[in-house]
Length: 285
Image (cartoon, rainbow, N blue to C red):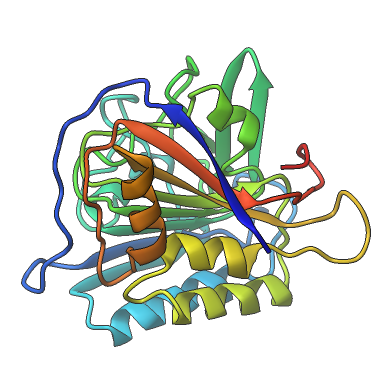
């Protein structure tokens, strides 16, 4: 399969020069999943089956690789406050160690997701706990209801394993965040993704192959699935924030969970995908 990329300039010109992760730096992960959406204080909706297996596999690997801390919680432990930004929402605590998404080097959420491509452009993630500001987190640099601005502190890479988490129409309207910290790699899906044993198997292969390099490349290769039929592909995409096409390709190919190479500033956004991938819930790429 051929991997292609699109390019758009960042909405904000940024100039922080970043180096690869060093051996003596603390390595941290903050990982969430939601399987259960019903019951008291839950956000409501259809239950999922594989979130704990999928996110739990990454937790086990980060532990095996000697990460200093891995915060792993599910269902009603996924609070709006933990993943929203204090600068964007009065209740946001994304920088609070260790449960705040931005406090870690590697972040992940597995849940239901959605997008809006008319007027304000954004993607969204459904929370597990309704005891807070909202059951749904919006992430976008343009939507009036934006709740997050990840990457202004420690976060290097973010995985949002939901439908429409990296939707083409949102990215193409310069609506995904471009932060001024370490954030270089954002992994998600254009169109629908599937809560399934096959999806989890593919995710496990991706994790196994991405400790030291290939974080973006392996995600697009392993998590893209194209069964027989039409308009039913699972389209994994990687968004890389770098200063040049060559720097983006370097990060896409060589950044790993345990070695977050990011050689430049983050002035430009690059969108990597499998050419021709055609999902339910999105245009063909």
